[in-house]
Length: 128
Image (cartoon, rainbow, N blue to C red; front, side):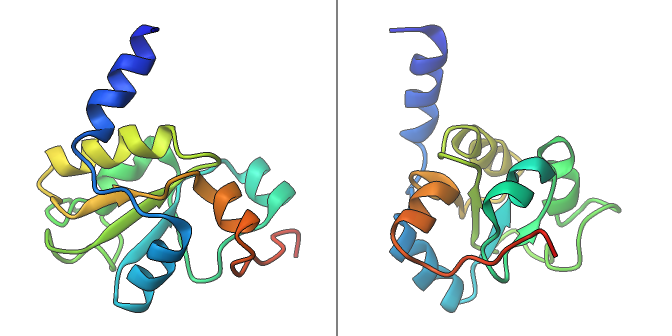
């Protein structure tokens, strides 16, 4: 097993990861879905309606409720945050980073955006 596989496994053990249908239900119950994918992926594959787009390189600053650079939605450490990337790898690592900032309810979407789309859940075209 590679070092990154070991790291990913240990990080995921700290998360209560959500399936696409569980993530949809979480959003309906007030969770914030956050798309960390690069713009090129969003343009090519679409977006989840209502998801907040935050580039991975500024994620912690935008979601930390104590940060002066936070987004308005990041108003509490109790906020349920569900991150997603393309396939659910980078989002697992990022969700643990958010937990380490005190956002204990942060998690990610199993299989990422592509699993969401494969389940037939709502997707919108990003090309305008």
